[in-house]
Amino acid sequence: MMITMPVGPSILRYMLTCVLMLGFGLAPSTGHAEQADGQPDFEIRPATISPFATSSMMLDVTRAGERIVAVGDRGVVLLSDDEGQTWRQPAMVPVNATLNAVSFVDEFNGWAVGHWGVILNTVDGGETWQRQRLDTSEDRPLFSVHFSDARHGTAVGLWSLLLRTEDGGQTWQELTLDPPPGDTRADRNLMRIFADKRGHLFIAGERGTVLRSTDQGRTWRYHETGYHGSFWTGVALPDGTLLIAGLRGSLYRSLDGGETWAPVHSGTSSSITGIVALDDRVFAVALDGVTLESVDRGENFVPRQRDDRIALTTVAALRDGRAIIFSRTGVLAD
Image 1 (tube, rainbow, N blue to C red):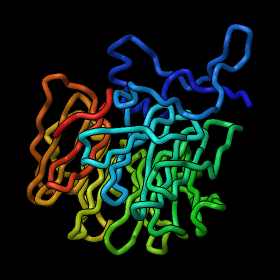
Image 2: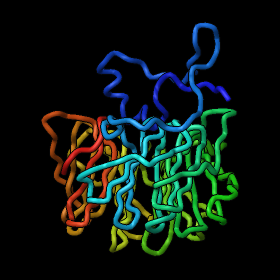
Image 3: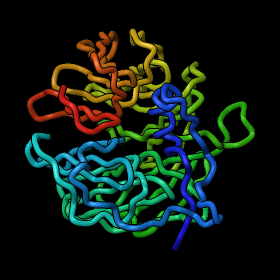
Image 4: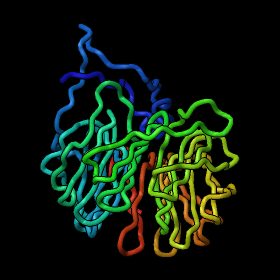
């Protein structure tokens, strides 16, 4: 089947790279690419196995037991069994659509989501992947996914797209959110879903959106943050502290399970793309090569900037307490 593909990157990749694109004089597009004869120029097919895969833009990373699994541009999946020292691709990923997020519940069972509403599943730690969902009627990307166990999962995306499964992804139900307070419809982009230690789910999105569910994603409630820009990422610390971050260095903190939120001075105007709890600190990455560290549970952050100012896209914790960082050009070091 031949289908059209956006000229520019997905909405998520657009936000992560808009500064870079403007710097090169390029204009992001939400249109569809066609050849001169009007035929579409993109076909859903398996991801390419490439010696240059580790230089691909990676958009999310997680752990599958002792293994690290990262996903990104053009269906690239990277696996590392030595804490990021070496990487390899799986033998088969059934789509070449950009993968925006990945979630594992143990060393074997994981899910990845991305363009065309695609949902992939693995039961062998990422060695092989099967397609559970694909909607080629429109490119309505899924931006994030979270599974609490091997059966219960939630995926979120463009224009308040919210999908839920209770059978490990064999079937997905689309949930309809109520409009946010003061709005007439629910159409905000939902960028990141994460959970706290109690199993409560949180969604960070555009226009200062924070949603919370206390029943495994069956019902959701909006929580006011006082912010009107976009949140791109979030994390729950082991002590229950919640942090959400995004556009232009915006960073907010909650000490009461998401009921109320207060701004935190991040010390940067670079958009924050990933945040992770390490052994003794909180570590975040941002565009323009910026990293941020906190040693007081996210109350204060110290920013630093890499000399190369490369756009940093996501981050994960290593076993030794360090972080492994990804960028628009692949894997970097802490």
